[in-house]
Image (tube, rainbow over all chains, first blue to last red; front, side):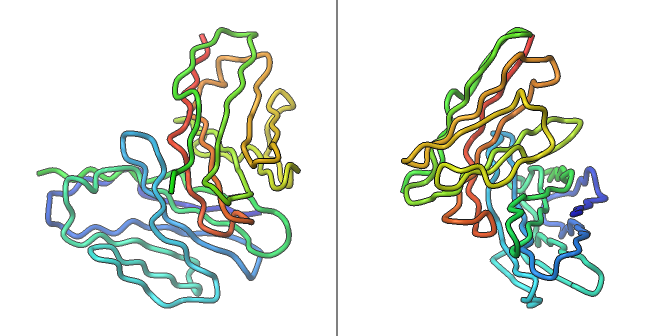
Length: 116
Length: 113
């Protein structure tokens, strides 16, 4: 069975602070993909990143960075110099890339509020 | 390139009724997945279709069903609506398998009274 845990239910920061959103996953499969999605108040899930289980290289995209550590089954997301527009619910998700069980398993999400 | 579209965006029904939601994937995408989002349960997988065939199904009762047409458009149907079916229903499309990037539509917010 797959499981994604986002222990932080809500985080509140002041603009320009750095913030890290934690994600821990469980899977018995050796090949899988990890995702982060952003859900602003409008409701639409916005794709942020996909990471293959074989690729542990960290990634940076502007103010966003992701730290994937297979040894601890974690895929954490850091926003540097946060902005008010970053306020949203962020979801971490997992899907197996082998077999035929194409089910995306989501964490419960972390509500990030960035205050001016 | 147009994104995933879902219709209607909002829907109000009463208990016992049935409802049909529609999803049009991104052009060229053949895999369509459906998710239910509620405050209590979060995002839960309903089912996934590819080339008009249901490949995967989540743990939902048989009142929830879906189908996919030859143009990859998909519909989901919920019969005998219950109060607990009130949720945001999200559709996602990807090229061939959901392991590809999945792009989500804006969702249909269903309220059951």
